[in-house]
Image (cartoon, rainbow, N blue to C red; front, side, top):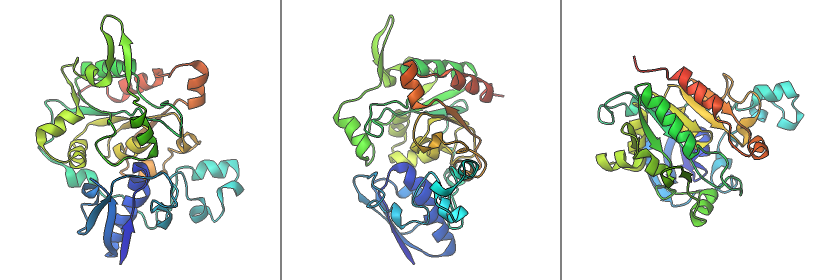
Length: 319
C-alpha cells in the first residue's frame, strides 16, 4: 500500500500527483494522501486524506514530486522513449513535449463526480480563470488585462452566456514561492480607464449584469473554496484560462478550454497534441493561444486578437 505526501505547485499536483493517486486507488494500492490545506475534495476517492501542508514549494526535490512515476510535468522522455531529452532529435522532441508515462496514470472523473444542480446560473456560463503573479522571479507577464477582460465579458454576454470570473488573491489556499512574492510585493491587476478612473478586475466585474465573481458564488453556497470550484466547474459550458495550473484544472471537465500561453515549457512545439496530458485529462477540446513572453516584451503589449477571434468562433452563442 502506498502513502503519498505532496505539496508542490498546484499544476504539478493535479497533473502528476492526482492521476497517480487515482491509479493507485483503482489498483487497490492507495493507503493515504498527505496534501496541502483544502485539497481533500480533489482526492474524493481516498478515505485517508490528511491536509497538513500550509505552503507549497516549487522545489521538486522536497515537495514529493520526486517520488512519483512522472517527476516532471513537461515530458517523461526516459520512460516513453528510453532516451533523455537532450538525446532526442527535434522531431522526437515535438512528439514527446507534454507527454507523460501513462502506465500508472489515470485522471479522476472530476466532472461526473461533482456534477450537480446546485451550482448553476440562469444561463449557460463560461469560466474565465485569470492570474496576476510573479513568474520565475519576474513581474507578471501571463495575464488577461483589464481591457482584455472587458472585451471578453462583452463578447460572451452578448452571445448569451453568463461569465464566472476567477482571479485568486493568493489568500484562499496554500501558496508557493512565486505567489508569496506576489502577495508580499502588493501586485494588483488594475488600469486607468478613461471616464472611470483606476479600477481593478474585481471592480470591473461589478459593472456587468451577467458577470459573476467566483468569490461571491462561494460565499453564497457556504462550501469550501475547492469543493465550490469543483461543483461549479463541473457545470461550466466552457473555459478561458491562463496556461499552467488554471489551464490544467480547466482541462479536467471535458469541454472547450481556450488557454493563453505566454511562458514555461508549454511553449514547446507539439505540447498540446493528442498525446499531451492536457488532452488526456478528460479529452477536453484544449485550444492554445500562443503569445510568447519574449514577444510581449519586444512589442510592449499582449496580443489578444487571436484570443478574441477564437472565443467568437468557439462560443458562438447559446442555442
